[in-house]
Image 1 (cartoon, rainbow, N blue to C red):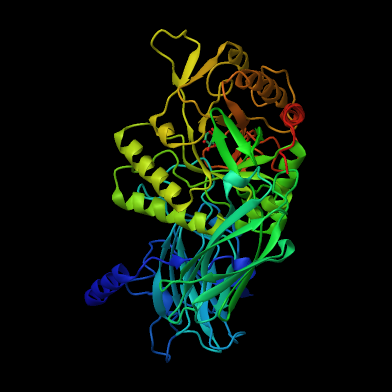
Image 2: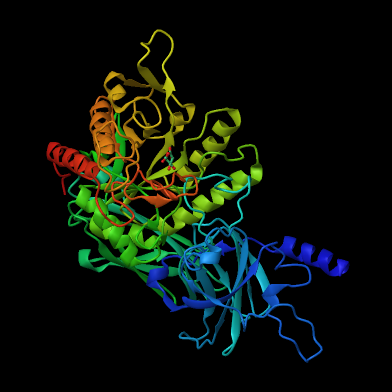
Length: 605
Ligand code: GCB
């Protein structure tokens, strides 16, 4: 027994982290594995080792055989979906659950390579096929893949995934967050087939210097992988009449550039997407991409060469009506529909990578996006392993979303306190993200300080040293909710140390939808409404104000929020309730955004 345990421990230490997800999953031939999966609770987290290695899917060979579990007789959970939302007894569960999915497989392509694609599983996943352990993935919000070509059979395959949503100090996020720790396989799972040599990755974007020129330049890269990589790939944008044969080097990489006088630039007013085809050997992929530029000059943000004000709102990746993680196009439509009604041209996808459906829908609807990783509150800044984990999760998010015109900002952190270890860690993340994607802007939701050195008492200073490395200075500010009355806002001024544009990345306060009182009564819609008015009046005085994303679009579940009859497990700072009803403050923001939209002309095409 001890020997077995030691062997298992060595074995599990040898398993590698999952590989990067197959790119553009929506453009691939896939077979869905969504649906009912059998599950076994593994509260002590021993399913990969010890006397019940659940990934083996054992069954007694005869009547005297001892096997102390059975997937066959177990209950089912629906994938995608958190376990918390599906079973009352799992609502508060934090630990491991082992999922099993049986499937038959008929290849659709000749001589293909076969992968499993997982949209996301929170937080750590051990995966195996037909009893063979294949690896582990860490990170609850980014996709991953693993190859099963040599293991998959025509009949009776068993895919087993042990998912743990245990919280640990060395994870990203750390131990405490103000959102619900939904566990399980929260996004789609699919089988993907690709040819032996296939398109592993590609990047395409408008060269920003040409945004205002008659003739635009579109630059791109293609990366192929396999044992016999073709020496050429073809890239086409049929609607623009563009086609190019790209030379591929021995490592599988090639670059291309197109010139065109006919490009209609992507913007919130004109979310124009073009079909993109890439072919290489037996592989071919189709995507829909938009072309736009984004840059800053002094204290302003420019989209396609014109100044823009980002009329935004913060969003959690949750459908409040179902009280679960969002995981479908319908969920994305509900959420972005509210944002559009509010008058938004921008949304902050807080505080972790959201489902890909919402990013793609934003591309179609013309909503600009800020995306971020859960480098939030208590992160272990001193650990090299945590830094590596952050970079890996970042690379997974960038790989998935880098061809979306909607995404304009990568944010590297939320409300973290400056200090040597933190500054070094985030500095390294900022350099890394920029090296992976030099075309987008960097920001972080920082905190303000009281201004000292001769400034009046009512002045605040935004001087977080990490902002040196960022393009946009953003900060969260809750005057009127966490400090002072809403009317305090009138006295406050902000001094921003940097000559950069500013986004107010959060402000807001709670209201119980349907509770009406005067504007000094906490939790009333009137309090929240008044606070929005006062806060907006204060923030328009911030030098360089280029956008805002109030906290938050809709009420969301959080274990930190337990005030009976008011919160009942929900953070009530939503402008829309968990029933989908709008609160009074919704209309204050909507009016402000109407004014802002009128002030700023539509960016030039
Ligand atoms: C914050 C956090 C956000 C919280 C919010 C609140 O500063 O960034 O995650 O939910 O405040 O409601 O207090």
